Length: 256
Image (tube, rainbow, N blue to C red; front, top):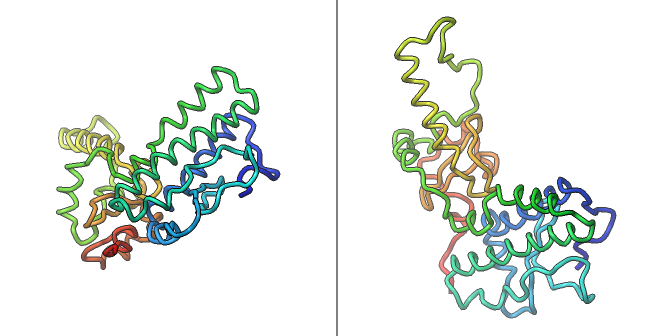
């Protein structure tokens, strides 16, 4: 398994962080959007298998590297053996935890290899720690947005977040040229509170934060929110969906 060789070698903190984000995105895709394919590839009858994430946001289930020691730290070995001996959600959570540990080990391997000092290592960890862990994304342990659910009920035909569609020229300004009127002040305060609450929400596919200029959609089954782009749903298409199921919930089926 040739994971770290070739012309690609991150040498700065920003390079290593980009590498981290790419590998992380690939693994999150395997454990969420492509979970059915991932599940099938982790056949317990096969040899020890590992889940690899790559800098280009791709993922692969494969055998570990043959050379010892390998070019990069190896992911958890034999993830496929526990597949049928655990509840699927527990197994996926376990893979997610080990994947988080692997990403950290790869990032700090690069840091050690290229001589990052204390401040550079601290900066690197801080940047990585700003993102939710794979475990948090997969298990949905992020904060629930109660007000979003009530808002979603009011917009059940689309299940999209209030104010989440792209704002265009039709948006009305909250301030007049002079001092804002009382009604405008109250509306502005409500909008600011709503945006603060929404800002804590993370996409169930990519794990990134909510942004007010993006279209989002909520799964009726797991109640997770997703970027429309991440699940390939447009605002126009959402208008015709009575009950939306995310890719993970759509692919779930009874396990033997």
